[in-house]
Length: 138
Image 1 (cartoon, rainbow, N blue to C red):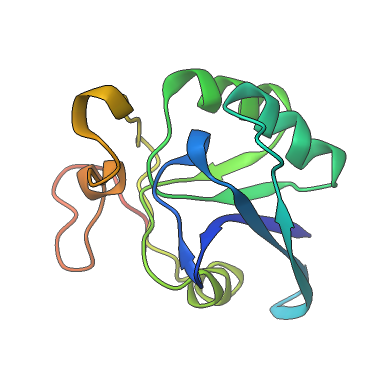
Image 2 (image 1 turned 60 degrees about the vertical axis):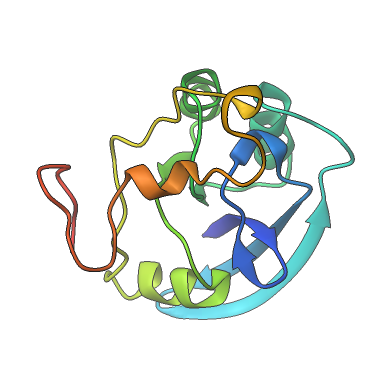
């Protein structure tokens, strides 16, 4: 299994379409057997789905993501786990252990020009403490 995470300084980058790097993990069972950080070379939004597909990725963990990118990932056959924040390594370990908290309905409806780089699309999803009615999986 290959799992990609939007990546910046060890953490999950919160804007899928603007990520400059992915950390791609290869997992067998419940063990991470390898990982590498890859640059997106300026690819954005829909092109990122093909970028991941070309690298054999089948699962993506990210923060916020727009509807077009969600559709592109679905079209590429990549499972999306959005609304996640914090350490990339810890998120992947939680995922392969079956304990990752994510928001299956995450969608960032606003764009950079409305909230700038300081906004956090991922904050609309599941927090560590409350999930509300977002249908989170534990």
